[in-house]
Image (cartoon, rainbow, N blue to C red):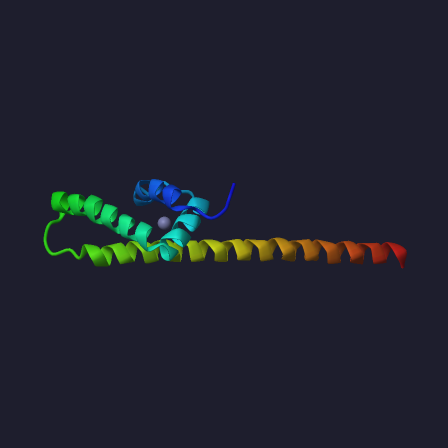
Amino acid sequence: MTGKMDCLECKKNIIPYLNYELDDEELNEFLHHIESCESCREDLEVYYLVTEGVGILDNKGGDYNLSLAFTDRLSGTEKYLRRLSLRRILSYSADTLSFWALFVMTIMCLRMLIL
Ligand SMILES: [Zn+2]
């Protein structure tokens, strides 16, 4: 069942998103919702800052810009989804192309049989 993700579902997907556990479809709906819903976006940012913040304290330290990292993470997801849909379009075109190639070849064979 695909459709618009509501806030409840979106909030449930925040942790899986941060853990890279969403599939492409879920990722797409999640990002759509995040882009249009201020409340969920803020929640996501808080989760991100908390989870990443803890990781950075453990590993790196220093003056790491978390807010910037969060924006990067979101735009990384956007880029991933754009590449994904481009790949789909390209593979669709390839399918269509091979269909027409086959079609033309069949017509040509038929013509050779007839003539
Ligand atoms: Zn929401």
